[in-house]
Length: 485
Image 1 (spheres, rainbow, N blue to C red):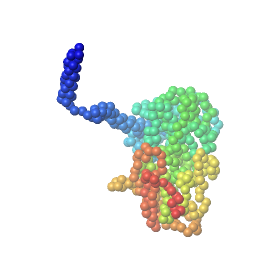
Image 2 (cartoon, rainbow, N blue to C red):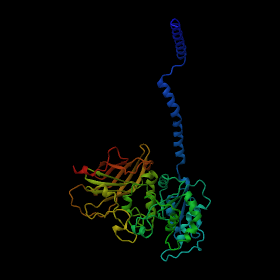
Image 3 (tube, helix red, strand yellow):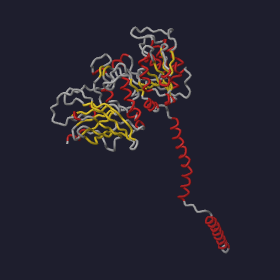
Image 4 (spheres, one colour):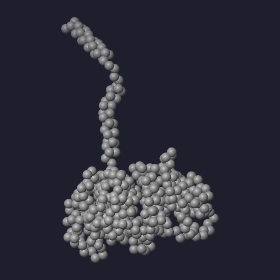
């Protein structure tokens, strides 16, 4: 047995050597792959298919964006006022951009062939005499108007519709900003979008949870369908309500759908001069403007329609930035400057904080024609009493796009109102005739988080102030303390 053991070990070693030789030969004859390459191949196999769908997903998102072609407007109108109010609708109605909508009247009105393309289709509202109405201070036309969303839904214009938007015949919409706002929401869900009144008293009397119809509101298509099925029964349950918009909100409450507030819908339940509200617009898209017959023209010394026609110029150049406020300081002259782009520029002597300037000044009266600072649902500041702090106001005169530089150039000229004598020993803005503001159009302004644009003084000459407005640079803020040094 001792002689057989060495022979067994020799055969075992020979077998192992032969096996190793065969394995090594096969390995060397196969294509060479390092461990890193094998890992890279596995990673590629798992990550490569992900890149292609992400591009497709981006394309899908672009194609699925809401456009004007997805919106149908229902406009409440009165035959008695139609001759005057239709001029407001002509200012914003653009059927060539894919707009669709219906003006709902209480009776037939005279029509003119040359207005066909400048106005939506006219229809007569359905009979509402069978509905009870017992509010002694209101008018039963509120029932007719409250049914406009449902009647528009039944109109036959509902192909490829995502939103129904309601407004009054004295409401002007900034259609591109309306689209920007609606793109924030899923049109397949139940949404009721609008805003409250500026009047605290109106909101208390009616509801803070109600979208005021004059300022306009949007209802997603599925919600409009649900509303249409139950609205007539719902209206019968509320004969004592005053208006159409509180009837609408009552039905939304029964459906369990709250108001989604967007501050760019403006009811403007105020009287007098809107300057303070427009010059300090909240950081949100400017969507609508209502009660045009109640307030003064937004530009001085022109009619209401002519004033709004002037506003259309910046609206077409850069709708996203319309009315957006920027605040900066002229260190050379120690001035505080507020730019409400496309509308007006204000120059104040001395230093005022952004916290103060971003509050609307009370150039207007409340809905009951009283100068009561407690009457509003937001903070306001009094009109400056100190004669040296009274702002110098420059209103938009003209604007254009310079194609070579892709910059908008808006010119604001001074409104020469009587200025009280100021004894401060500092530069006087009286000599400034105009302000030039350069700004690059920014259609994606509201794709980013809300923030005021920054403004910078480029040059300050005796009669001309030149400024630049745009996205704030890294670290750039409206820091008023820099003037103290």
